Image 1 (cartoon, rainbow, N blue to C red):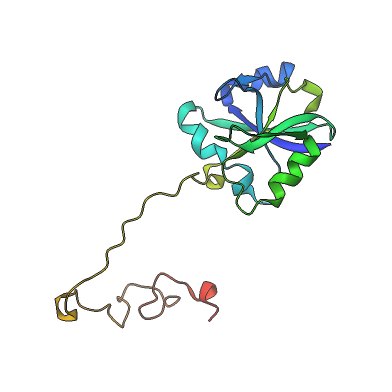
Image 2: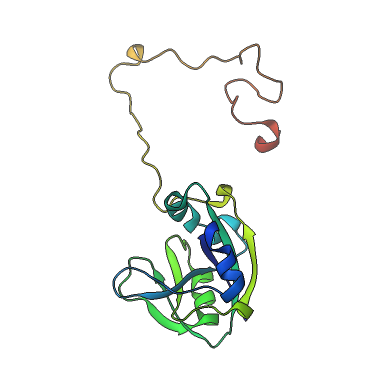
Length: 179
């Protein structure tokens, strides 16, 4: 049995406990239960939390862990991919695990998930969420002669900085640097 995670609004907990997970519409004419394979990385497995949770405030989201039979036909692909592949649930897990970056990928089960296929309902935290598209970051490249730049970084830390930080590498604790 393939193991998947479906994210749903907290308000749906009683419904899921009573009758399983209903299908919902997606982009285009896609309808099904949208989920993601359970992977070793919490952040990757729960990546959709970042995109979905803002639409379900203030209650937030919960994770529904479901087991789908290995030979169940599902669709796997990137969320904006019109050519998603129709494969078995087990093959969908293999496809996603083999990706270098599974960000934005999803598995669609084309039928409701039955109550007996729901393994558990659990809380999820935003710590596992990662954006699908990285936040833009402005980098400036100094131009002109060096004397027009700001003074160089100080070579000594401020007095209030603990001893785990050394010199101008204040933001990197000793444990991380390997000192």
